Length: 255
Image (cartoon, rainbow, N blue to C red; front, side):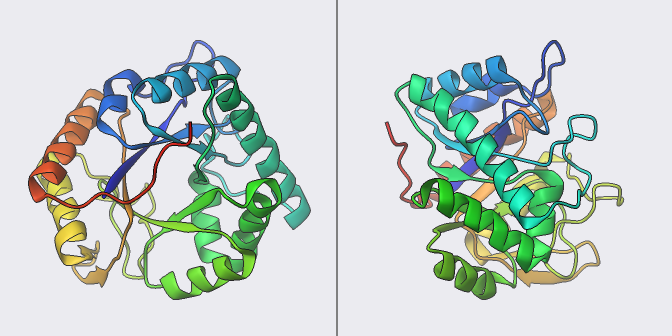
């Protein structure tokens, strides 16, 4: 089971996240591409750091929404969204190439990620953008009850998928991430995070906010490192995975 983390989300003098502290403990770095966060220097520094720790690099594109941190849904035509995605993916890929490395996957950010999981037209557009740019790139999607439907659409587009679960986010009864403004939507307690991770890797399920359970078959777990407590949680999750002796997903950095 691989750990992925959103990285490189600082912008100019505004700093977000503790990338240097988190990078040694993760397997996959989802690097922001400048639209919802980041800038060219931040992207360059984050790519260099990922390469130093042999971390697989993925593009983390979002809506052009720096003020809202990409968490506000925007209405884009399919062609506009496709072009916005190709622009961001290509920008990060260009920086990767200057470091003699390259992208392995794409994970949309925030509102775009949530929207594509609920709107098949948006999901198809995201897949089409990846296919147009580099069909060898995998797409990270939410692991939930729609897995077969999502896989079928990916097969039609010729896109590989990585299904992801979240260590520190609550789920609603439909298998989607609970909205951040809901009480209990974001976990801060390390024991609660560990319990969810163990449920994912050993039982293939998570508890929902309403007290139910949903099946969940994931390839990778998303963690966050945007404060000291979160970094401690990432370290704890890494130790939990090591003790659990879970065989790793075959996904090698392309260098």
